[in-house]
Image (cartoon, rainbow, N blue to C red; front, side, top):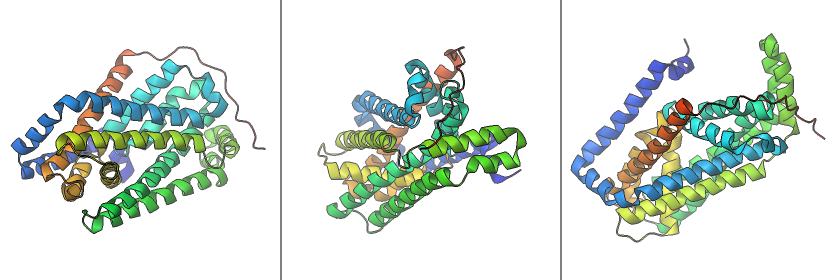
Amino acid sequence: MSLGDVARSTLGRAIATVVGLGLVALIVRDLGFDVVGHAIERAAAYFPFVVLLEGAILACSTLALRALYGDAGKNVPVSQLARAALVGYAVQGVMPAGRAAAEATRASLLARWVGTARAAAAAGRMQAVVLIANGIVSTAATIAVLADGRAPRWLPIVIGANSVVTLGLGGAILIVARRAKIGSWLGRRVKRLAGFGADLDVALRAEAPVPAAAIAWELLGRVVQVAQNAVLIACLGTGAVSLGLAFCAEGIHLVGAAVGDLIPAQLGATEGNFRLAGSALGLSHASAVSIAVIAHLAQLVWVSVGALVLLLWRPARRIATKVPAKEPQ
């Protein structure tokens, strides 16, 4: 059994979750449970707003995926798009490397309306869209940290490196997906997938080289996340907050998310990053860590909603005819 198989297994997910929760517990214990608890209590009145902003982030990401479907996206009922978004969010919150698992889940739920090949192509390209949006915002965060001048010297370097890596990986995924004939490669190795592989290559080549609309929607989601950070900084600090501080917090968050990708919801990784870089936000260590804790609690609300949707909301029975991908011009 490979390391990837272990990570995807029930045991692997359980171990990763326990590790993440253990890291959170160690960090909070080091700072003092009472101190962190008091910081979280101060933000309690703002928590419903934080949850709503998390829902807006999910909505932007869902619209980015719909944009990747092109004209076929019009065939997807809004209710089923919402169902897939919520179920995918729940999967993302409990799986290691949750983003990839979430996109695979959404693709399987929406393929009946857009076609299997197009759904798979969009799921792959969505990874690139997220990376590029993260890279753009990380660049803005790097500038904000440098302009502020209070951060540790290593912080702008780490956030800037994350920007370079995510932009590079995102661009590489778009190029490889369009030119590498991944479907043909898959069809040669698994004969029963030969037809699907050919359709997948057609779907990938038919798309625009740069999915500008999808990137714009995902980038809007990051802007909403910056606003979410601003709310948390305001209620956990002295009440004073600036756009630069909000972008700085977003940069810290994105680095933690990248480092902790194999841990469900990046538990512990983002808390640890905020613990190390809290001085850049003008917050105590406990207040800085509380930003990550409260954000995770807001995510847990939507993970719970997604789990309930999976259990109670039955999928539509209608199966649409296959939507062929048009040949590139």
